[in-house]
Length: 297
Image: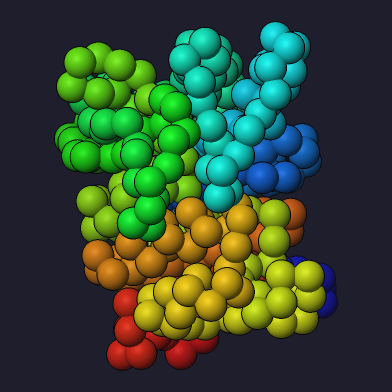
């Protein structure tokens, strides 16, 4: 009986969050260990399906760095990074698109459907979802990343259509130029921009660290709550570096654009999505537009 009561208490604890976020659009950037570990992957996609069935409207954005790197290695190419952003040269763009918009995207669609949900896979090319140009500057400085795109415009009509019909859009980080050229887009940047464009109630970015830490090597220095301005100060001070830079920038853009709750969570925590959304604990860093927008937890 005690075990049954404990289970009932879990459901009761979740009720206020289900009520608060009923019909809310939630953008999830999916990546890291949760994308390659079979058990973590199954748990994350189960969470996504559960969110849909309790009345939320999830949108999934994904990259696929390890898969792309694996293919490049088989092709005799090496992955190169500049300031935390991957370089995509002309001869590997086609392979990257094949992996991201093909194998990875359709695999996630299949897994969501096997978990009981409905899903449709998209790339930025579909219905002109993500129009971009070649990225040539980053944080005000010149940069050459090859066929890496900078988002110029997002047309979210197809995403709105799908979520309105109870379908989870699964979006790969491929964009298209005005001339039809394919571009690789940083998935963290795309997810933050999409959350802002859709005016999502929540944007959750899954990664392989506990959240934003004042000392990246010490999980005990996790900052659980901060404003967009404070997050930007951490970027400028160098406390946030490497691959965390585009993640934090994406979160700042979403928060400043009015997304109510922006989270960086540890994707290595099983069912971290449910813990973050439906409990009063949380498993990462919450970023809000300003002090007034910071919730009590």
